[in-house]
Length: 118
Length: 114
Image (cartoon, rainbow over all chains, first blue to last red; front, top):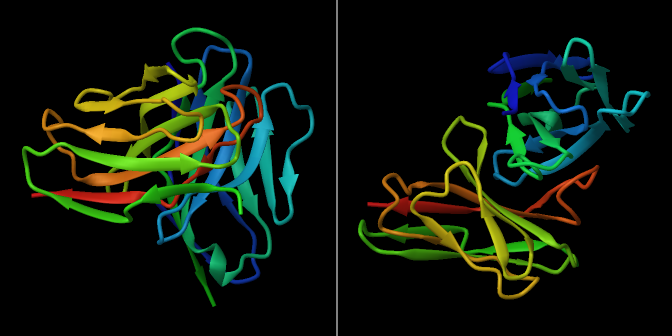
């Protein structure tokens, strides 16, 4: 079974500074994908960034980058130059690519609430 | 615009009644999903469907039912057998089940059962 752990219930950051949101995962599968989603107070889930388990480079999307350390099973999200609009809940998620009963399922962590201060 | 629509945004029901939540997508995605989110928690998978007329149970399927008669539609019925139905329900779709296909989410339906 897959498991995602986000150990930071809440994080605070000053506007324009960088912040790292932690995510560790557990799986015995070799082929998997890691996702980060943002959930504002309105409730919709916004896809931010994806990292495949075989990708050698860390994924980047604008101000978002994923610090992927496969041996440590961690996939931390780094947000650079924080903006007030970044205040939201952030979820790390994983999906295995191999067959079996877990195929296709996206497993989510508990989330981290990020608050950006002006 | 392409996307996923869920209706209604807020839904109120009396205990003991079945209720059906709508989910429609015009992204031409094969896979669709239903998740449940409780306050301060992550999402948990209820059901998912890889193709029309086929669907699989997720982690918390008890008390729920789905159908997938059309590619665009994946309605979820919350039955009276569901012990704690009050929650935020999110529908999602993706091109496929594996690889880098991210899931696109609808705006969600907040269901309150009293």
